[in-house]
Figure 1 (cartoon, rainbow, N blue to C red):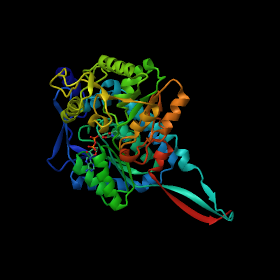
Figure 2 (cartoon, rainbow, N blue to C red):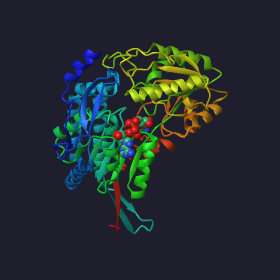
Figure 3 (cartoon, protein in one colour):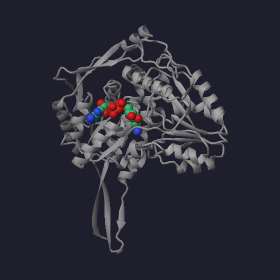
Figure 4 (cartoon, helix red, strand yellow):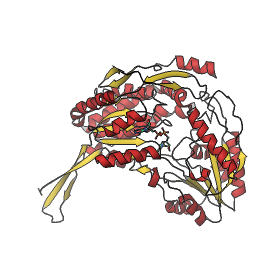
Length: 491
Ligand code: NAD
């Protein structure tokens, strides 16, 4: 694997970079601090990026501020056309982007191969929402004599901070509505995945989006913190862990700065007694362990009643046990390595805690993984998991499924809601109306009936510890707008 990965990395345009993308220029780093980019499948550091200091964050925010008046006053239809050109430009970069992404975070090509098309889809969906900005919105006062023109202005300069698990999607879902709204941005990817995002910035420039509208700085928590606190930033959009989200919320609260937070999750799949387990098996990995378990909304807690508990356990163990674990650059691979060695060790700690707390391993477990040089873990399925066990309560963010037993559907709903999170979820059942009724009882931001997916037209966001605000849909666009009501005599 090492040779083929080094060979793949050698073909990539971005490996060791020494600049930030600010105001349309490659701006050389002035400090010495750098972060290596490590292939988690092999342990080879194949790239590196500079860390932006406070002065560089100032420069990026100043470039975004300078570009704001021009972009904010560009007609929405022209901004939409630029988004469509950007979508085409991203798609032209699909292959290089996918390989870069897989070598950054170990996501299998089956996942990253679709990243450019998904990003393009999001850009086009938001381009199609230009009508929302162009329509006239006049509301009559209750007295019938006066009226209000409701205008929508771009919120301003936005700091967009992303995690490493879906480094393209989780930026585009902020960038597309921000650009359509007329905002300018500074992007800060996770330190694990700082290179693949360059294809997006390159595509924005190729699409004719003016210099300074999209700026990129790299770095870790310090760089992110400098952006969040920057006096000239008008809005923060963050996807990442709940503890960091809480800190950002506190800072934005103090500054009265609008913030969108997409945070962690611990979602449940409720399996009703009439569920079709063959159909469930076909989507189990996608909906419960997507991206080697490193997806925020996946339903890693499966809750089944006595009616089919044993059959669910048997199906899950067989399905996960049969899925291919291996080279992320092999298109047939289902599970890759974890994104980093630190993440591998964290997740292994959860596997050990599940065993120590008495859960029953039915697939995987604390066993040696293949490819010992990489951050691989054998995917694990635990049965007989009690709701009070650590593995049933905390976000693991790795290939670990927990299967809990409920006495009734009512108890299954109660167990599903007994977490501090509220992000995703699924209800499996042949009677889709009955499953829908169960879904409506779960306290969560999004939930699917027999599948889960993000609909680009519908809001996606978490409740409670899973976040604040939503992305996608008109609601996601509205997060980058600030209304102005102009009252006047009715005409
Ligand atoms: P993280 O919170 O460690 O980091 C996310 C980003 O924030 C990174 O770019 C990081 O450099 C930056 N950052 C870290 N400390 C910061 C600070 N003090 N101020 C400003 N920025 C800071 O998260 P991660 O480990 O990269 O990602 C995994 C987490 O993301 C999981 O909890 C997962 O559930 C969550 N996530 C949520 C969603 C969602 O839509 N709800 C989607 C994907 C991932």
